[in-house]
Structures are given as C-alpha cells and as structure tokens.
Image (cartoon, rainbow, N blue to C red; front, side):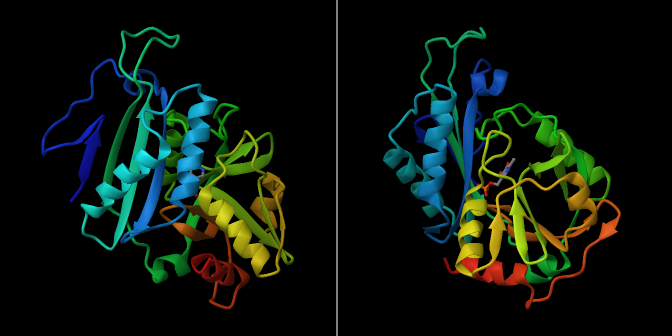
Length: 276
Ligand SMILES: Cc1ncc(COP(=O)(O)O)c(C=O)c1O
C-alpha cells in the first residue's frame, strides 16, 4: 500500500492534484529527501530534515511548514503503512504560478509518499553489484538535493543498459559519486571517499559510515580517488544510500573485484554501521 500526501492532506485513491504550472513539474524547482523507517524507528530522520532545510536555503526557498511539522506529517504517513520497512519520499516544490523563470510569489508545497521499502537480502549483498564509470555531466551544486535529476536518470539508465546496477561518475578524472549513491574504495588498510563539497551529495548514509569506519579504528581519507586508481587498484569498493545501506561492488567496468566474506573490513563496517 502507498500513502500519498499533497499540500495539506492525505489523498484518496485515484486523485492526481498536481497543477500543470507547479514549478517542480515545470522546472524541477524544488528539493526532496528519502528516509527509511524500520517500523517507527527512522534512520537519521533528523539529519534528513536538516539537509532538507539546508537545500531549501541553498535555493532560497521557504519551507511550507516548520521542520517539526514536516516530521510529524512524515511520521503520520509511515504509521499508515503496515510493513516492517517503509520508505518515505518527500519533496518541496517552490509552488504554483504562471510560468516565468524568476521566482514568482508562490507558496511552497510539500508532497510525499510512504511505501514498503525494498529489502536487499544478505545473499544479494554478498554477491555485490556491477558498476560502470561515466562522465559526471551534472552541475556544480550537487550538494543540494534538488529535483533536477535528469543527468542522474540518464547515467542510471546507461548503467542498466550495460547490465550494471549503478553508474559511478567521473569529473575531471576523479570519482565523485554515483547516480543515486556515494562511492567508497578500500585499499591497503585505508578507506577513500570524495570530500563533502559541491561536487557530491553528502549522503546521510555516507556520514554514518564514516563514523562507523572511525569507530572501528580504520583509516579513512576524504579524498577523491582518481579514475585510474578506482578502475585498477582498489581492493574493494562499495556504494551507499539510505535504501541500500552499504552495497559492495563486484565489478568495475570489466574488472571483477573479490567477493567479500563476513570477515572483510567492509563487512565489519556494515555491522558497526547497523549498531550506531
Ligand atoms: C546523487 C546521490 N548521492 C548520494 C546519495 C546517498 O544519500 P543518502 O545516503 O542520504 O541516501 C543519493 C541518494 O539518493 C544520491 O541521489
């Protein structure tokens, strides 16, 4: 079952109220978040709400409600879905107005859905996923979780068409992140991931994993990996996101990576992450 919320109320089946001149619809003028709940326990809800606030500030848009009210609408939506694992997508559009590029007078609009989350089995995780590398064709403000995802959509589609699961993006010879996840590499006792600057979305999962890595005493360097290092050198690599947690990479383009056993550092990190 999926629960939908639009503007100021939960929707009944079949309703599609998005106005044709909503700016999210016309321009991608808005921001969003995805949060996972295990029953009523969220993973990092506070961090997601704070990132929503930061994204809103970055695009100079007011939130339609205080964060606490958005939180209670999110929680109310989750409570209406009976499954064990529930994902909530919520977005804020700048609102509805006659279509002109500069900001018109609008009331920002919250819309949301909550639905059962995909659960990745441990077998799937142990097998890992294949990735391809592609040029990062996005803009220079990737730290904003904006609705403009066309380059991400095209990259993911190219990955799927190549028989892979994700597209790892390369900007000026350096790995930034993937189309819908952050990227980590592991080599010679050190974890690497791109620093949280304008070229990546600072994933909430990424932030928690950094804590888990440090808690276990591994060295982590928030430095970009060169394409060459990532393609030819890293011993292990993984991608991270709210819905996947940590997903090992089994293949980078044509290079197979070793399967990861539960004794591997990457596996230990996942266990530590889950108990943070
Ligand atoms: C481009 C991009 N990077 C990273 C992430 C991971 O972020 P989080 O861990 O907050 O889900 C996402 C998630 O959607 C994403 O779209």
